[in-house]
Image (cartoon, rainbow, N blue to C red):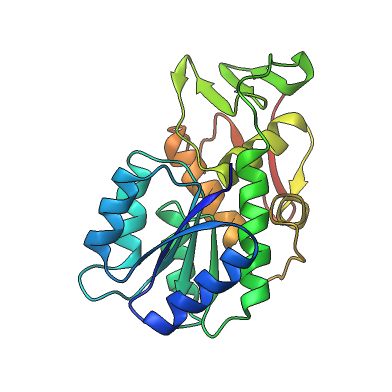
Length: 231
């Protein structure tokens, strides 16, 4: 079955351009030019990924992202016209998995979509779990095959990116994993020192786990080096 992608942008030419390139890759594309129609599509169609413009006539892409995350965990890519760090941090904090700044190169957009879908769809819950793909430590249980995570028997609703970060930290228990290594493995791209993406996702993970940076039970910051989960 072909992946189903929602494209939300009030500029029709941009939405049409994205649709063209995605359809060339055999994706099924749903388009919306405002937030209300987008949210209606989210509820009526089984989606695999959403591309959300930040600036829309009736609500922001951030608000749509937040509403999607109340029920759904499929990847979200934000489109922002401003190359401002605050926009990126806001989107990531609300549950977005990636962001692209306008103007963008269509082939880069397609590559980002493919990377997010690979991360999201590579987990097959119909297969029996391999013991090597299940980590249990201090009340935290992560099942990579089922793409499920519980903490003290309470399900954690994680985005694909958050899941990948937590899996990498847990599978390297006792070892410090640098921000560079996390970014390279999870996003598959070169890390830049000014990039706050990893930090924002760690903060979001801690919030969902009721953990704190000051007195962490699970994810510890090793200043100047990276992050780790104790054995």
